[in-house]
Length: 174
Ligand code: CUA
Image 1 (cartoon, rainbow, N blue to C red):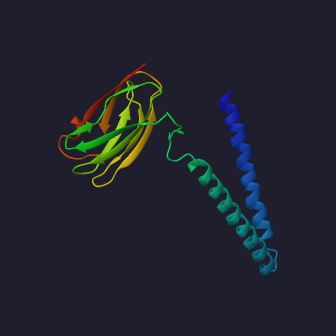
Image 2 (image 1 turned 90 degrees about the vertical axis):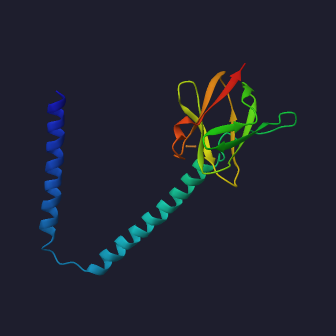
Image 3 (image 1 turned 90 degrees about the horizontal axis):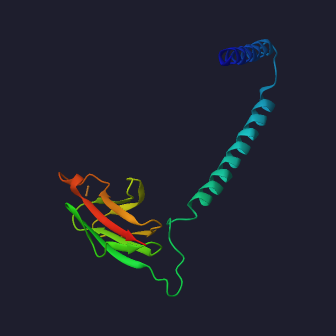
């Protein structure tokens, strides 16, 4: 059944393409002034280019407007917990590792040696937030845990022989 449909659809397309080739071959005998054709298609190309530029600009702004992701709207009395994170070959130094559900947290992430990747994983090892840990630079990650549990911090950038041993733990309770 599916094969019959596929065969008929293919046949229709093959005939269509053959018809287009035939039409072009037939028309190619005809002499026509080149200038108006050129003008017409240059116009089409300009229109296509301009439309594409506008669409891309709108899409870019639309998809990036929430950056940085998860940055909460802070109000008085709802200050985030600031957590200093230092990556070091080969481990994580975190000023705090125990949090509550719905507590807004701001991780300030840096490194004391080379560049590492700070990645927070949930208990099913889904990556839920990440940033680079770079020497002489502090990157911020905003997160508000919505589920209690044990989260893991893994290094996301190869940083030396014991890169795979850079595992940190975060406990989130109700
Ligand atoms: Cu630190 Cu890989």
